[in-house]
Image 1 (spheres, rainbow, N blue to C red):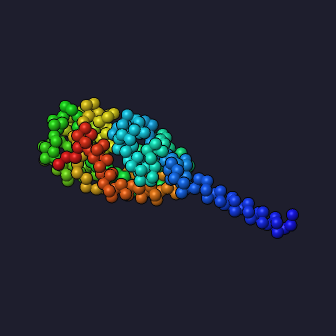
Image 2 (cartoon, rainbow, N blue to C red):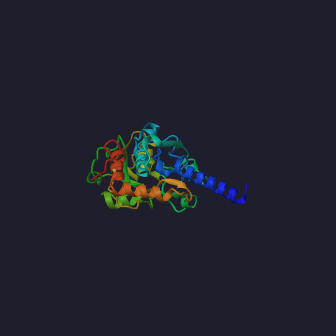
Image 3 (cartoon, one colour):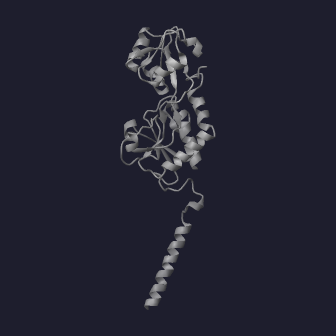
Length: 279
């Protein structure tokens, strides 16, 4: 076989391989999901959350149901990215595992991660999908338990931790007649509420759900105070320098701009059975 013949054979083989690459599984073939570039699994969106995941962020520890604020947010982001619900795969991790440096077994993870500069050294964050509000918490036998408006709270003793957005909210939004009751820590404020030293306390929303669900005997959320900004911002966590960060942030931004995030927050975090917004 001559050199010219060998060259022709090689060129024909290369052309055949190139043609096969164009026709076998490229992005134009209408697969079950977006390209695998950057995703943990081809055609799937892998989402991480806590084990267990708690109400109202996830209902009944079943994120695959789409019930609960963060579960619903995850499926809304998936839809923006082009994934069908059946192509979303859930994995579990601890809070610390998710924000530790190193490879991830998820495309993004959400379990109320506040966006901070320190954490950004180890992981990427999407743009924020939620900003925490301040919440009035009491116990069932408190005289403040029947309050349903900000004006109705003014005669009561309302406490908060010093140096926090919660204390600012007490002083500026509620402005109780006797002034704010100031404590060194949220634990001190909680103990004062339990003992009846104060009638209610103000904490951020995630703390309010935790206190009333696990810490306070007869704990009750009176409601959220109108947002004035300055709360912690929650972001989706991705691996450091993930190729997905930009497109995931774009999906979150689209959901914010079209009102979906507000609708989901109202449904799952602001209902009468969770934390209604006080007027």
